[in-house]
Length: 169
Length: 159
Image (tube, rainbow over all chains, first blue to last red; front, side):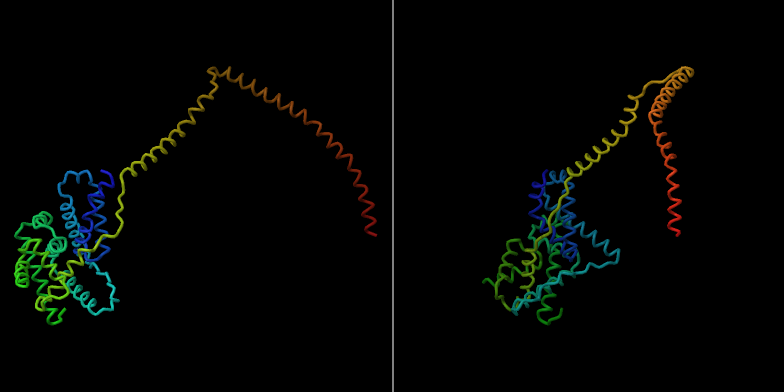
């Protein structure tokens, strides 16, 4: 397999890999490194890749495992991944400030979710995968995915309702 | 009504029962400017999903090809072969210049004496041709009387 062929396979979902990594690892740099690592792994196993029917699902599973491993080793070292994506707050319009602000609430709420729920929300609501695909990627059964998703959505809604009506962050 | 429909969809959505299509309807609804006041809290959630969908991996993808590695090793091997080649060549050349040896010690002694004699003969020839340099020595001693001049000079400067 040549480099171009490989890139043609990988390019469509590299952003999805990156976003899933970022969802789990939070920091942008960490996620970039993880994505790079995963692409390298895929490239090194390019002969095996040709045998897989669904490279995308396979890569997402790889991303999940890689990031969870990374998080585990970080916890073992007692290091916390620092969230360092500072946003540009120089927006003059009141409305835009407001939406930005509420978006950062959502991202905070998302960060507090358990890993499993983060992944399901990421794959379903952001990447819009089928339930079947999510089951394959996360190695869960259909009901489990739905239950996790429902829990995550309810948590986000509840917390948002709180912030919305009482301004509690 | 549309609103009724949305509320129904939201309930289904929270139970994780919506299809992708229905979720798209919800996203479309909440990306409008104005949303029903009691549904306002859902807005940032869907807006966040949409924003996050846009995020891209901007770093360059660098792929190391194995071919390059193979070429690297080939060049290393080539250099090694060259070095070994040079190392083993020199004794081989020497053996070609080998002029043979004598088995019998007496014969070898005679040969050595003969060749040494040849060397000393040419040496003496060279020495003889240089012997005229002795004349220089003789001329040097004849010039010694010049010292006599320095004696009266010394006396003049004293006065």
